[in-house]
Length: 326
Ligand code: NAP
Ligand code: G4F
Image (cartoon, rainbow, N blue to C red; front, side, top):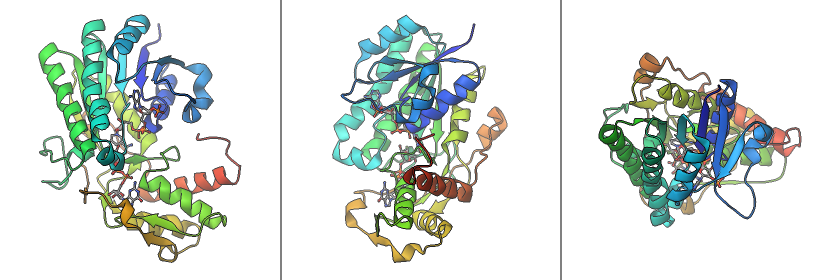
């Protein structure tokens, strides 16, 4: 019998890559999607005939108990969230409800429906926020700087709490920023690569950004979903940092992205106060030592290759050489 996994957030960037990875490992994949007036299946269109999508919402616990009882997955990957930091300042209560309390609803659904289910929580390097240690590891104290970061910290600790209280196989992956051609257009990396492609093709003439000095440890999403899966294959649940161990500024990202198509970012980037945040996370850099040692995980795509892969994909999309986000 193939293993069965449930992914919440399957329509998102990571959900699509994780679904592909699990299919490759021979899993039956169930994706939980929330009801909306138009479907948002662009990232999973190419695998839609190989997965089952079922309705459920992190805001509605009964829907999740019901689908766990019906589908009986052995593994649950909780990737759903209001995941955009900037939006969390404007919608702090919704972000707390979905990204924070939503984790409790799902963990409790697991406890009620089948406590033998292995559970993955998508925790975030945003929890380190105003960092108290460089680089950040599993033992670095947290200091979140946004309603999103605070909500993720709640989700992290409730995962630890359910593991310790109810003996659940619940693991928390503290993932640093990971990107891809499937990244949402509102995140800085994709905003840059998509606008670079538009400028190159004469469809835009400027790129409006906020803080260019923020530094992030950026990896490739396709690499990071493998670490999620590895965590649930371990005998015991645990917490893991997943990162590249390198950091680069938004400015550097612009330099490489524009440079890749023969342009100078300084001719096009306009600083716009609207994209500054009430509180910023200035520097993130993680150490993947534990993931490397215990999971045997290593990032495969380097920073420059990631940037150029994203620019090339956006050029191909805009020129109609790619039919979708895959
Ligand atoms: P994403 O592209 O924004 O995807 C978020 C997913 O959550 C979407 O499928 C969305 O569905 C779903 N969702 C939102 N609210 C929901 C609700 N109330 N009920 C059910 N589903 C809901 O995020 P991502 O980049 O793939 O990230 C995956 C997870 O990892 C998130 O939890 C994120 O916070 C976390 N994380 C991401 C990174 C990163 O760098 N990407 C780093 C650390 C942690 P719709 O399609 O309907 O909107
Ligand atoms: O791309 P971002 O919006 O990602 P951020 O805030 O680091 O959050 C992402 O990574 C987290 C992991 O650390 C995830 F948990 C979270 O879900 C999300 O995936 O912004 C990156 C940096 C920030 O410092 C921001 O201030 O880029 C800076 N930035 C500068 N100009 C901008 C812009 N960010 C955006 N989105 N748009 C701009 O115009």
